[in-house]
Each structure stands twice: as C-alpha cells, then as structure tokens.
Image (cartoon, rainbow, N blue to C red; front, side, top):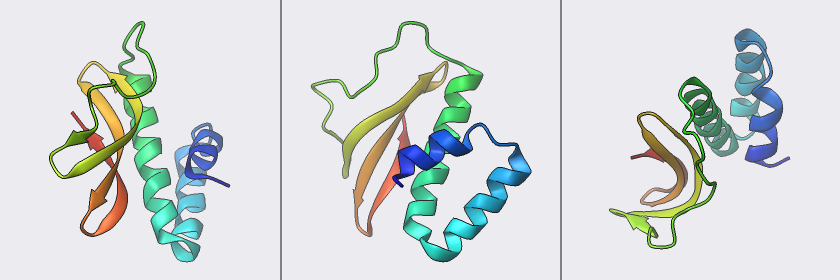
Length: 98
C-alpha cells in the first residue's frame, strides 16, 4: 500500500488505533511511516482550517523551495499550504509547510 492509501485509511481511525498502526509500520518500514505521518498531519491541518475553493496539486511555477523539490501539494488551510517534497540530503520525502 502507498503512503497516501495508508494515510487515507488511517485518517478515519481514533488516535490510539492510528498510533498503534504507525508504531507497527515504524518497525517494518520507517521511511514509509514518516511519509504517512506527514500526510496524516497535513490532513489534520487541512480539516482544522480548510481553504474554500482550493485546487489540489502544485502551482506550475513552484518546482522548488530552497533545496527541496516539490512533488505534490498535500493540503491547504488558513495558515498556508503543505507540500510533499524531496529533501536532497539526506534523500527522503518530507512535508514542507509554507
């Protein structure tokens, strides 16, 4: 299952159950667990303060923020947007809030 699929499935779980699932995933695939956690955090933020009429995806002119390569927009809220980005060193996927 992908990080997005896991985050979508786990976003409906109560906090204790979600944390149990994340703990198991951290033991078997720490990188995937970090990505799922970032996506879940973004979903929580988006649900708390949704931006009316926001479009999904990355603006065409936004390819990089500093050293981070922007892969996708995870969500937007009253405090900004959260992007899935690739950090070059160490190479990993991260959530980047603007």
